Length: 427
Image (cartoon, rainbow, N blue to C red):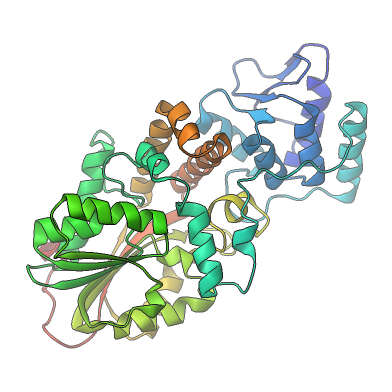
């Protein structure tokens, strides 16, 4: 391990305690300019003692994340290589509880902080942490609305820079890594329309409609009449603008409405793309029952959702994702989702796993964010840009190693016309 005299060596020892390993595949640079760690390894720069103080108060993923979001830590090299190194050392990028130091290790960590002059009160939390969105009864309408607002009402300009012109915030479908993000998102929207069997005049409900991309595609390409519902006022505002600009106000209606309050069914088809992760395990039965009741007999529902593929199915509520990205978000395993849908009276027609596709999508989003970094920070905040860079890069690694997946499950309400004999009819 190459070093320069100063704080970096002791800082490396402190980080080793948090990660639970003495082999840290990172090049650390401390606030005094000293360095420690393998030459050529991804660099992590500690700008001040405050970074170590945050880690001391929250020794694990949350303390490291807070330090990064606040700008006390910088990751100036390839973000994927940096988090891959952290993951290999301490499972930083993986879901589930972060390794918690023992009492003896905490004492050693405090001693290291004393030697580095880093003891002190817990620094103020970054403003991007979701404090308001985690208050009240879990998955009440008010708390769900606050959680959605925390994630989505951060500036339409910010999301346009990250997502690109399609404004689709879910996994794309790639023919190859060279397809390109915009073409891959168009392919995903079209695939959903085909799986739902859309035809002119069909009435479609888009649950969690985002910025209206699926609703626009279904109306423009398939002649469907679409009702899109979202809890994000900013999403709805831009979605309505896009609908008006496309001349589709007679065919597409965008509402700020909880899916539980939709009462003007039945619909011929329902799309739920990247929405059910916000519902919660305890509410899943109600979600399935509600959508079942909103469908005509024979009508199809496509549920597109991220899932746990391995490891714990309940994230640590004090980890980075619940506190900064998706307050109250809960991902089910594929098996759990299938049980919920079948238990709610649906017949399963098709299941397609898209894990590799989401890794490609997230890498493209990170590239967009980094290419427009200054604009994205100005459109929202520098801390928010840091949150999104961290969460998207870490999530991409989760999909690449198979810890998380994403699945499209196509189901139908029994009755009505029989579906095609072969799945090739909608692929």
